[in-house]
Structure formats: C-alpha cells, structure tokens
Image 1 (cartoon, rainbow, N blue to C red):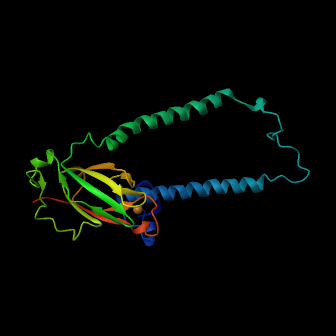
Image 2 (cartoon, helix red, strand yellow):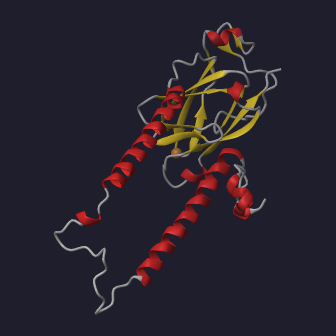
Image 3 (cartoon, helix red, strand yellow):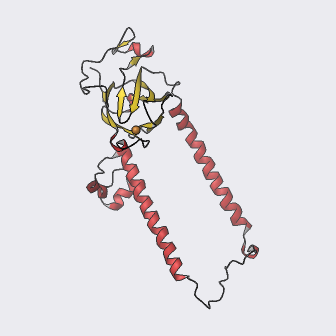
Length: 244
Ligand SMILES: [Cu+2]
C-alpha cells in the first residue's frame, strides 16, 4: 500500500513492515498516529527553523512593527472578537469531546454492570501473567462449560500447556478479570479490544470482556506499565475458542 493509502486507512502502514510492524487493526491506528505525529513534527520544526533564520535580528535593523516593548501590552493590535472566538470554539470542542467520551468510558468501567459468565483471576509479576481457572457465576451456569457451578474446560480447548502466559476462554461469554500484582505495577493491556487496566500490588482492579464481540482466535495481552528489564516481552496469549 502506498504511503498516502496508509495515511487514510486504518491498516498497518506498509512502510513499517520492514521494522517489524506487521499488525493491522488497532495497532495500525497506533502506527498511523505515529506517522501523523512525525509529519506534524517535521512541519512545525521546519517552519520554526525557517522563521528563526529568515527573521533573525541583525545589528542595526529597525524594530519590527510587532516588536514587544518591555512593560507594554500591545492593545492597539488586539482583536476582542478573535480572542473570544478562539476561547469559545475550543471550549465547545473540548466539552463535546468530553461528553461523547463519557458513555464509552462508563461502559468500559462499569464492570459490575456487565453480568458475567466467568471470572478469571489474573496475577501479574516480573515478568509473567498467571491466569487462574475460570470461575463460574450464577449466569455462567446456564452454559455448557459450567457444571453445578464449577467450570469444566471444554474438550475442544487445547491451546494452553500451562496457566502461565496463556489463557483459553470460550467464545460467547462475558468474562470478568480480577487483576492483582505479585510485585510491582503492571498494566493489563489487550490492544485489539482497547482494554487497559492498571495491575497494582495489594489491590484488586477489574476489567471485563464480552467475547461475543471478538472473533475466535489468538490475541496478545501486553504489559503496558514499565515494570523492569523484561517489561517489553511481558506478554501472554489469549485464545478465544468456540465451544463445541
Ligand atoms: Cu509488567
């Protein structure tokens, strides 16, 4: 894909493939933001350098008409209409962005409001993710993977050899995560779905996921809080599997 194509689509920009950026989807958005940031940085820095050189004051130059005089506020060049406009317009914009962010944030944070089928206890540590066996809730008991309130791993589940750095959960379930840390701060980050929650020692934090909304497959959980030497490789596989 061309660079222009990359910039207007949400796919992973092809120019990054050589640097190991091969993920599409949500990560593609991150790459796109990075590229836009670089473009803006180049434009802003270039314009600044141009002005620094072109308008450089040299000995004997007359004062520029906009030159500041110490202790004098340049009232004569003021424009109340513009001042009001550039105060009110961003205020409206920011208020609007705040307003439209509230509903999705509330949805994300209202863990208890999402009746769960399963609860998974997650312990983070330097540098691993440890997942407990899912725990059935009352609602979960309606599902085939819960027998009298006890989770029964479906026979079709065979993706994880251990409960370290690997979790396999059913497609079609609302799953709660109870998160805590064995040592330092970590963060439970599921970038494809946009879940990111701090994992704090001596504290239980919560996150939730409706696997109905996610395609069956393998995803990555990352640690999104710098937690020491191997932070960057602190990842886990999460498999969302159809129950047969
Ligand atoms: Cu970590």
